[in-house]
Amino acid sequence: MFKTTTAAISLVIVALLAVPTAAFATDYVPAQNVTTSGPVVAGAPVDVAFAPGSFAGDESVRFVVVGDGPEAQLAVLKARSTASLTKQAHGGAVTIKVTIPVGATGTYTTTATGVTSGRVATAALAVAPVDSAASTGGKALDSTGGKALASTGVSPITMLLMWAAGGVLLLGIALLIVRVAVRRQRAAA
Image (cartoon, rainbow, N blue to C red; front, side, top):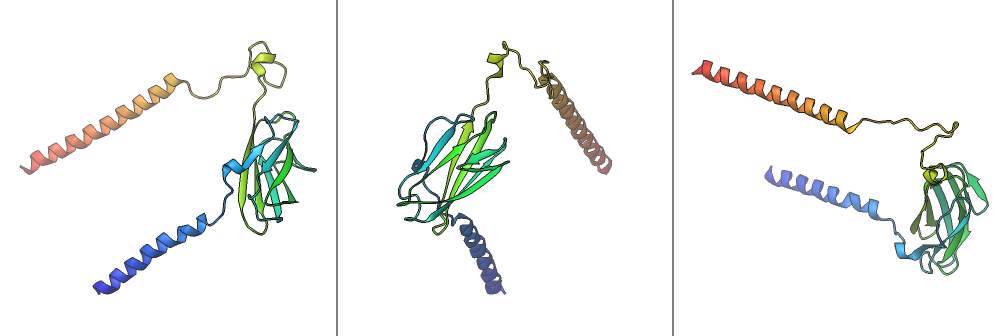
């Protein structure tokens, strides 16, 4: 019985340790092999280059650009949030031109995957938001006519009061539990 249980536990441990290795089987390109031609400016193209040896020889490389903002342009393709294109690498190196649309902010991620090697490389293209305070005299404005933006969220004082009330409630519950326990102890004595 002991040997069977030990063998079963050993098999479970081996299975738990062996299965996660499949998740790490992807071969990633080192970050230093990925470069951009300059700062990412909305409306201007930027070259994303993958150094020689990033991919296997002259394989095809599939590019995907994903972003939260408006349409991104990848070479000649446009898509609302995702654009994809396949391009031939030469000596394991490839360069793609990505154009972030005018008015876009946030981060667009370019992912390159070697079709035959399966190697994966990513480049995060962060577009800085337009400084609205500089163009509006220091006031934050909305897009509906120049009204100041409403304050949203919870003030720090309100949050502090909520935490304090929760703490008092928990303290009262603990005090009630102790009182009941002492009463039962006295009754049993």
